[in-house]
Length: 224
Image (tube, rainbow, N blue to C red; front, side, top):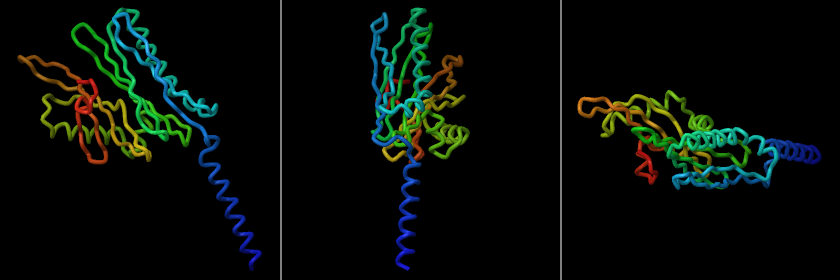
């Protein structure tokens, strides 16, 4: 009987060991950090381009989706500088060792307006996987339609002037335990001034935990 118990115990330990090793393959003792490379435009404005760096070759392969997004940011800068447009791009690094994140905010001056956009990129260090808006939304168990309806309802209950035309998830903030604390939304509104319709874009943070909608400018971001 004692022999059977010992065999069972050894079998349990072996299975546990295999399961644990399969959970996060080849990510032990690995890190993912974010570096920011800065340059200036011809107008003296700041351009900050982020880079995800890791000491693990397999994780680096997984992070290629982030590299592609960052490459797209570089293309935006190259295109606007070629035509002499005034722009600025700043990178705000946040998150924890478990979930490093960076939110990139930029504007481009056009003829009669200044166009703003943002993008958040992150990573799950334990799993060695990238996190974009797509993955962050999945972590909330909401669909894009669910998110749009929730944000639309809260906006319509607010005192912000204008008629909501569209919503777009552009960023997020993930907490230490992997919970999505905030979702950054770009809202397109139609307003009326002197009997003339105007299109405006404003940025808000949707907080899933408390079902709140807060202007990102109130959180310290230089955004409309």
